[in-house]
Image (cartoon, rainbow, N blue to C red; front, side, top):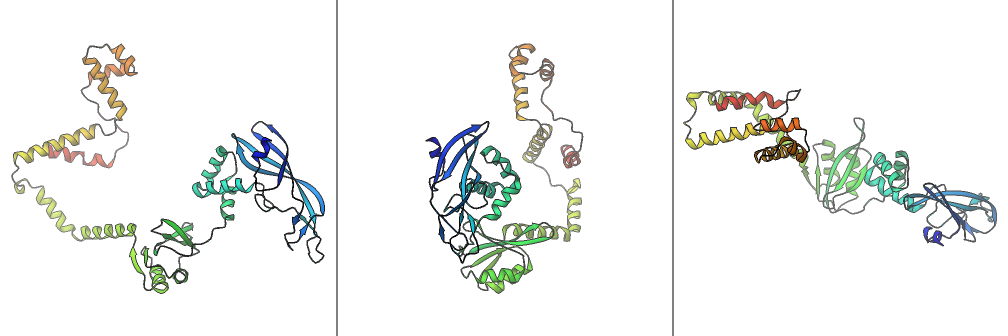
Length: 360
């Protein structure tokens, strides 16, 4: 009775028995349908040729693998004009020819494949109870029947993507309003993009990179559409323009730096300015000395200082804070924590001298 609830209800199967071994649940089943359709001529046949066994992986049950052992049949084709004389039993749903999994189990793998990819999807499939290899995950994705979208929101983004980085590239088209991929093109040629745009007259705005073939393809395929640069390339353009400005004004920048560092050219500092500078340098120094100290370590240091000021012994403090007595004794003798001495230098070390010079 329990096995009847385990089997899919949309296929005519009868559970004969159920048994298990560590980690695997087996369900022995047989077929209830009285005839089958020939895959070549689509004629029904009820003349059984022979029987054979199939094992199909189903959805997991309570963390155990579930395998359906099916007693399937082969049929004679009664159509004398059909070239196929014997064919295997066909089902309307849930069981496909040559498949080693139920359709619902395959759908679960397809969802994991689309969300996680090959290696990660294969790793998660072991925990989900349908263990497969990364190659099978990719094979499931390639078998998916994904229909291209006929209409878009009218605002799309166009960019290239790599089949194989540095060698083979295609074009990805994204609906920017719906935030979903619309289509993938086999290359990044202007003619390919132009033909795609001609099939989508609803396109009004196209966001693209600085690729020349894309500009030509959009102009040819959607001449009335507005072309705009995407956010990434806008920032790249801004960075390039800023770099060119600084490079062209190198002489002026050096002169300004020289004038600023001459004491006689410095304007008189007010008391408020001097105080603000001192505060900034103090904050900078505190930040530098505690830059790589974890919050947990700083909390324990403050806790040790607080308990020691209240008269607790080093043994009691070490037991409370869960530190060694040597560390507690060292903390009680320190005024503040300082950063650990790194074995390698960083870019910041080259500028620490400027802070000291500024204080002087």
